[in-house]
Image (cartoon, rainbow, N blue to C red):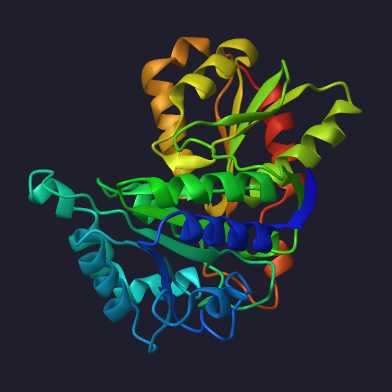
Amino acid sequence: MKDIRYIFAIKEAMEEEMYRDENVFLIGEDVGLAGGSFGASKGLYEKFGPERIVDTPISELGFTSLAAGAASCGLRPIVEIMFMDFVTCCMDSIVNQIAKMRYMFGNQYTVPIVVRMPEGGGLNAGPQHSQCLEAWFAHVPGLKVVMAANPYDVKGLLKAAIRDDNPVIFIENKTLHAMKGSIPEEEYLIPLGKADVKREGTDVTVVSASRLVNESLKAADALSKEGVSVEVIDLRTIQPWDRETVFTSIAKTHRLVVAHEAVKQFGFGAEIAAAVAEEILDELDAPIMRVGAPFVPASYSLEKYYVPGAEDVKKAVLTTLERSF
């Protein structure tokens, strides 16, 4: 095992896959000599050159559309969107083309595109650089949506995403980029669509993804000192999401909290809550609680009050324990 930062685990995943498959290339703004806005491609330009580490003009729609054409011709592009907020400039390419091409052409070819994008608050970047928009993409048939919570997961999931023959939206929370963690020296992949039980528990199930997984683990640690046993599930992939793991946990704890950084209204937590209510309502002993940001634009000056964290998860857990049907 070796210690590595989250951002460099991303770099390692891309580098290994580029060495393994000459059809893999990276495209985006400042990904070349600059090494990416957050350093994810630092040094790759020197190793693979301008034909495979492609700097682009400031035109998300243009280079994402280029990637769609390249993928349909047998290449495997990785697209870097500098901030998730900027994906609004290329929604036509992603939603109307990339997500639907394989379906509309009767599976005659694959569309192996990974679209990487950093999301979330924590850096006081303001309302146009701090949004969490994953629910948009999870709502679009044809797209897979991945959100990794630590360096180990981000490397294994990204390698699996690059090898997938379907388009994958790969979301990285900006505050995790500096996070350190241990990964194996040898190669490994993590299958898409499989959740991970990060902590076993018996009283309440907390389901989350990305940064809120780590906040949920902090809440679970604090609650354990009060005699509350919390099971924390990291979805890792929110589309498709792992019903079996979530439902099995709820059958054990009979209480559910879903937590994400995105605004609570219409977030992926609402889909999980609805599925549980539709399919295994009898397993619940209390109402489902949701944790998310308030329904206002991401704040600059008040960001620490806007972004949900461990205390919000703890409060939701205690609330569902106090309530019952």
